[in-house]
Length: 357
Image 1: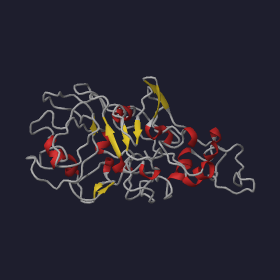
Image 2 (image 1 turned 120 degrees about the vertical axis):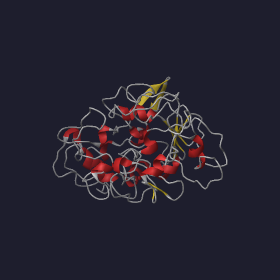
Image 3 (image 1 turned 45 degrees about the horizontal axis):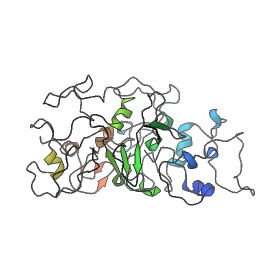
Image 4 (image 1 turned 120 degrees about the horizontal axis):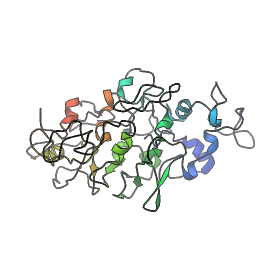
């Protein structure tokens, strides 16, 4: 998300490292620079060059702060990630760093058009919808509740694997979202198509794999807070069955588009072509769904791709957008936006897969 909520300024990165292409997320490995976020004595008045020049993150007005931080966590992250076109902007309207943000936008002050109802709300002390986890009673929801500021790796099959967007929950059982850059690896959850920093967070450059056809990497991660919203087909959270049993909640894994059939379920032909008959179509927009083979339906001339599965971020922006619940209301045609399309409605989101209406 937001290339991690903590992607720091390119200016500072260039100051310390020179020009570089990022092959992954920032705030990890060689891009983990202590003094971008920490200060030893909370007294800094000039930069790190010998003549006192150089860019540094300003100190907050209420310090010193715990962990030698330059500011309170959310304000520190937003010092670089709000209102600056040189890095990912995670709060409200995009300052212009990228095109359509993969995770959309957080909200903070219940202000139009990014109201609290539109996604994750910084500083909120409200309990998690569909779960029991609650943020810090004083500081509320913080960036570091979802992202590790130092990056996070996990050894998987003997390989040390970095978590996508530094996603990490201290309360989790070690769940990470794996990813590959430039060359797809279908055993990882996410595929970033480009090594260029400017492209990493752009919606069109991010695709979703499905290493386990019964599970979702993102679903498992979101479940750590939203515990009732994700589970196996037939389980207590989702219910239903792949033979036509009715679901209690929308599945986010384990049920492919069109596999069950029948007018009360989804249609692969409708998703692929925009038409229940599968005829000639002008459809140009598809929601991001998981593929076990690394093949996503992007052309109405190819009706053969199967096994496509929706997950949480197929229908919701991870941070939020200008729609309630961060929903992606995407019409079959039109320019793609963080809200879906300019003309999109709730019905258009549902009718990406469902035939009713």
